[in-house]
Image (cartoon, rainbow, N blue to C red; front, side):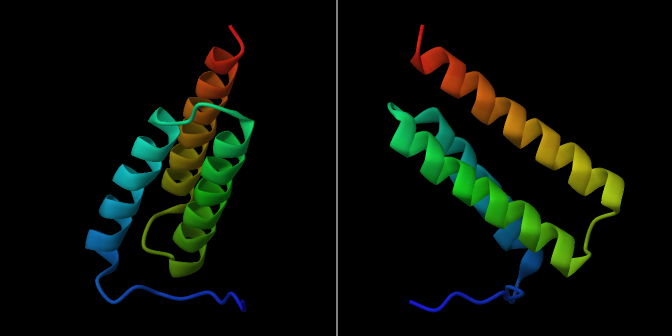
Length: 80
């Protein structure tokens, strides 16, 4: 399967819905493979934010930090 970069037609709606889906995915993680899949989603989301230049760099950096922190906290809770 060939992957490619794109810009969604309705970027504002897409970014909000994608963020909600990522949050739900992270919340539902129950093992390491789920965490890995969620990390892949976060990676792609952040990359799309960077490429579409709809947000200032500082905003993208803040969003990325918060998503990775949320993911790391969930991963830490799996092993407690």
